[in-house]
Image (cartoon, rainbow, N blue to C red):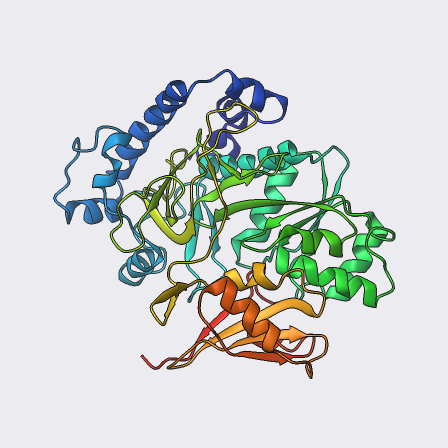
Length: 455
């Protein structure tokens, strides 16, 4: 019996021609107009829609809206398709355990090469993630392309704090750097996989020059290094940090690591890398040769004008082998930039992660994103930058880690009121005091909002 082979199906040489990286990246897209890029997207979308109609999940989702094959002829029609989110995927898994009916493998999982991981479970129960060879390697390529463009060099030693186990993140990033860069990759993982003190010693011993992962934990490692007698910038000479900056001011993590340059990027488990900063660090470029991004009103689902905030709804134009992704609502909020980019390439840019719409809370009639607090407190020397919000039946008290918890909190109340537009109570805790609540040492993304309201 002849079985399909992963690397033959992935066709990496073909992918490199279709999705160039390194010096070929800028040369290709500087010569491409917006109309030419749209033509590339349309060809992929046509193929993707044909694949989507073979998948029971989409047959059911689209059929419920009265949509039939042939109704969606181009990207101009994409808004006619309903969006879906994690809840829909979890319902599919519940109805068709254990893998759901969104993978699109006619003979079931195990009849063709497929990679199984899960999400981290940041917003609930971990979700099944499935990847085919082509979809997996394009996702890897986009991460490698981004890092190389930002300045990753041959011989860089990359220290990764993304988690492993069943979680996709650590494995995905390791594959990306191993397959598409010449960097030396260290898979340290979370603080529970490799204790923080051991991590900083590894960074010093192996000469780590780049750190990748979630900024909260990378920032914490700088303090751990000092506690271990290792001075950032002297004993550990990071020059780059590639992570998810969110609304935090990058200067805080850069200063913590002796002036390393921090680069932002965005992606989720279902979609892979969607956007990343270029070397000038002026907005995140959407990888529009592979991803189609819409920003939609949180309430109505209608497209929002450029410059306004909306939910990021993603269609992976390249992911047409296993588990196609067509109008997935991440519920992460961003905004399209309205100015032109310095490189003259036709890719649009976004502001980056501006909060989660499903974590948005309404206080006294004002929409508040708890993640926005990170940017407000990032560079205050009396604070560590760690915080957690609680949501009881009334109000949203904020617990901040303060180096002197006995200090007056009135200035912090004023600071948060000015930044959030509404007054919140502030409770100080000593350094490390929020770790149990945020689970920063064991989670991919620390918990920032604990909803204590009764259902």
